Image 1 (cartoon, rainbow, N blue to C red):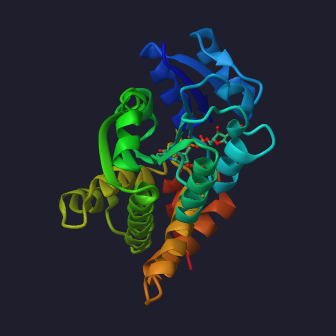
Image 2: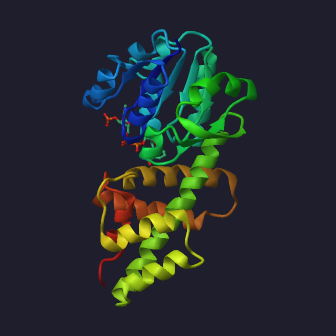
Image 3: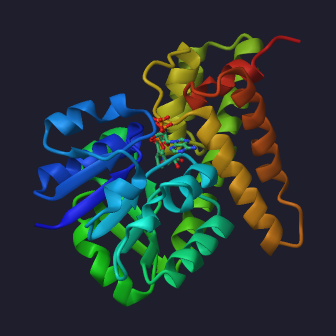
Length: 290
Ligand code: NAP
């Protein structure tokens, strides 16, 4: 039976770890706060006392944590997973991290004889729990072939963008474009509200107009209704992704990425008000009356 160590049991990681259990893998789990592991343990996962403990005897270690800092801690920090990973073990980083971090982590793990692939994802927590994520992979082709049995339980689509780091490049541009769009929806709707338009009519027009996209359709109704229950993607995570993307843009493009910078600023404001609330709360930040 294949053994997977799964580290990071937040909104996304919890469902992903459950997919390995449902697919017959032997699973060890670790999360910074233990309570999130309780039902996975009841379903057969082994609770590990540290990432290092989780990785003992694992064929693959999969991580899904918040950011670069968390990723560095669980792989390379005190009690980090690398301490017990045997040469040739697969290291699959699913968290959205910065491009530089992804490349640096790859070098560190490769030097220890481990196989690293970056595998950030798109899809919401329900897709994570249902094994329906889209996996954005950066890996050498042979490493991806080895990783496929460990990717199948969590993803329904694999997009292989190139060598290590390439999956992260795509994920960051995807989320930067999303950040710009969602901040834009909030501003447009806030203007319409303050100008006294019939918001039912505005929503109908937005959803059927040329600016509509799945993100616009998903967020605009919630923004107008101020319905932020059940946060799926937080302001804090969106700010992190936009900031990582702008840093990447600055290393590649001669012109300053103006809209990207504006999105980072907008999400810095949203994060300072409600870091753990749904990103759609952006409308409250931009809709204050003059
Ligand atoms: P989340 O619910 O906030 O979970 C974050 C996870 O990271 C938790 O397990 C948390 O542990 C852990 N963590 C944070 N800081 C840590 C540290 N310093 N050391 C160790 N662990 C730490 O976030 P999420 O929505 O699951 O997102 C996880 C990753 O997936 C992020 O990179 C995010 O950008 C990406 N993502 C999210 C979505 C989405 O729709 N939510 C979609 C695609 C990709 P605790 O439980 O102890 O806090």
